[in-house]
Length: 174
Image (cartoon, rainbow, N blue to C red):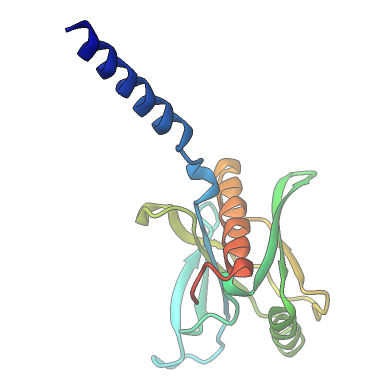
């Protein structure tokens, strides 16, 4: 009996070691979406959808049905420290830079409405910002203050960077 008990303990030890060694960091696998919609001035029913952005001081914006930029255009995201709190900075790829420049130069005074989902749960998604376009953005980089907690902003940034890595490696189908 001692022989079988010893073999069982050895198998149990190997199983525990393999399971412990094969665990992946789920944080490295999380992805996030970030969609930029353009404010629409037309007041017809087919021109767009009316959304409420920001929770404390809501801004009502009518946006186009389709996003002009998505997470597929993002190269990197950064959480910036600002004097009043924090901001998210997003750097776009070449196509995203062209689109951002085109829309920002053609629509001064309008808003980008930004929607994000940072976990698989539906409750972790909402309209997080509506920055006003004040000038042409030719650098491919945009910063905005999100209507999120710092932890949610960290999840968004981590998820966007994970998504960008997967897209760069060809692991993500768009």
